[in-house]
Amino acid sequence: MTGILTDRGKAEREAKVKEVVGRLAHEVPELSDLDGATLEKIARLSMIDEVKGKLRKAADRERIDYQAERERFIARASRTGSERTRKLYASALSRLEAWCTAQRLSPLELTPALADDWIEGEKAQGRAPATVSLAVSGASAFWTWMERRHPECHNPFRGTRARPPRKATRKLAVPSDVEIRILEAEATPRLRAAIVMMAQADLRVGALPSLSITGSKWTATTKGKDQGGTAPPEVRLAIERAGLSLRSPFEGWTAGSIAKAFEYQARKLVAEGRIRERYSVHDLRHAFAVRVYGATHDVYQVEKALGHANVAVTETYLRSLGLETA
Image (cartoon, rainbow, N blue to C red; front, side, top):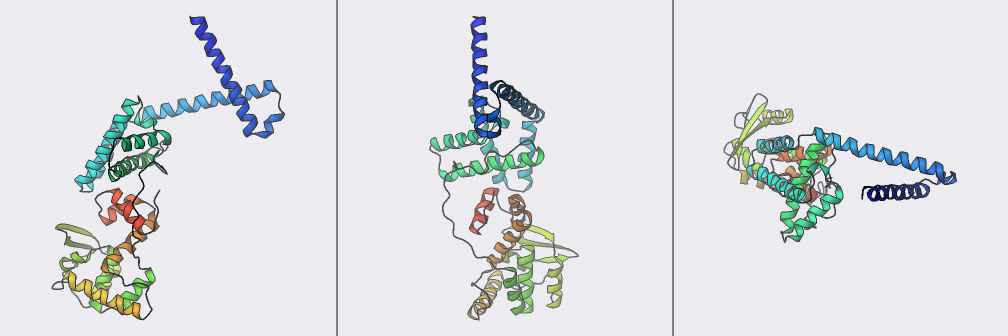
């Protein structure tokens, strides 16, 4: 029996050599003039290199503590303050790990083809397209994290065509930097200060009435949550030029009043042909997102800057702004 198996193994190796010889002759025409024996030597060397490459990849995977990296990634999601984000990532990875276990694979062995197979399996279970898409976003986020920490890792979900088709999203309005400058220049001093704060620090209009600046730091409350950050120099300058108190520049001015004043100004400038659209205060947030993504090309930086619940929300948001993420 051993002899039969040995003969079978030899036959399979020789068949593989012939396959590689044929591929080399086809893909590298310069080799077609070589004699058969030389081509076979090159084919065997190519096969050895291929095996070495696989062994190197396996050794690299062995050095990665997948469970520790998973825990670090989930902990990072928790630090954003969103329990929903943490649960999304944990659920996506748990489902992917269960599938890998069934296939007798390590998650670190995933290839683009295997990633597509997992996605197709998720769809075959009758899960809603939105649910599958969120799971893919969560898994993809983890592999992007791994790429940064381990150069030998590559995100197998990047560019996948297996993800359920996304619903068409309405392209959101984005004022240009020039248009924002025009809106600022034509506004009253107090409104100008509000526009600068929203455009430069990405503060929602609802937070302006509670805004307070001390030194280089600002604090405010929006959607029931306390927020804070570094006040850009332009913000302090605009507030000081308006003769407002840094401690409470917009006290007594409601978010609704600020929004209406801004929209009135935008309508006037559209009528004069000086800006393209009747922008709202929220469109300043769109411009901020475009600016951050343009500077970093990093979805996670945008997610953090905008305070989104998870990266899937940010990806949809950026697509609505006409930006395609990797």
